[in-house]
Image (cartoon, rainbow, N blue to C red; front, side, top):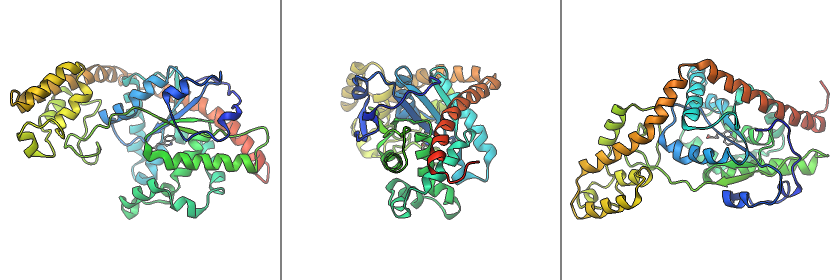
Length: 361
Ligand code: TRP
């Protein structure tokens, strides 16, 4: 992340497509360096689903763009405010996972949401620009709320999409690597930006952020369920020990047991994992053909997967253990990244207050 902010070119302010691919962005002729803004809630140790769904992509992006990686602790507090100490600990855990996976805090700033109080000021001003009706139609928010119990449904949680718009627009982020479920959030940020630019902007304008689509293979849970999640308990964590990996692989089941018995590759959880973890694709094809003919049993398959997962996680686990010995270094990284992003958001807030505030102070 560079410390000075380049003026946003017109084409990034006006109507750009909401979705772009990495190839499209890399082919852009402009010398303007795109700003990546993405983040995660610190809700526990990261798992291989996070790795292949996000981190793997971020590792490539950090070499090309001005990157800002957010730890969204306010969003974690929004539905778990009874245990701030757990969230505080998870902020450190996520940072350790990011570093161990290879994200470089020299290349991109790691920052903590509640460390940039200007984002909260911006959120409040943005809230005046969003009608309740439009807000309540947000499909991602709606389905999240449906799955929550009443005590978790706080006002803060309801408003997180607007806070997310502030996260993105505050430091003038214009590319958000995210999945399709984030589209309503980015649409909202774009609407707020457009509304501001039309109604209040002078020389200062907000960009129209875009979703950067990754070629992300979706990793099912170890139980074959759609989603890998800590609450379901079907994850393989980046910090799991050899023994735990062994156990989790051994306990993997196929959702369709009968198919498995008849030697079907399709829908077989172990093969879904092998598709991602096994490097020698040709060998994997041979294993699949052999399995279909009954030449290979479940145990051999699981041994193979265990080797692959262990080989992948072992170096991450070792780096993580090294880093965990010096938590003050980890803390310094967060303080540094947070203060750099804070400086950017301060600039934005000054502009917005100048236009929207009615009393200086
Ligand atoms: N809502 C995102 C999640 O739950 C986290 C997040 C907060 C975020 N602010 C963001 C992601 C800004 C991208 C950009 O994972």
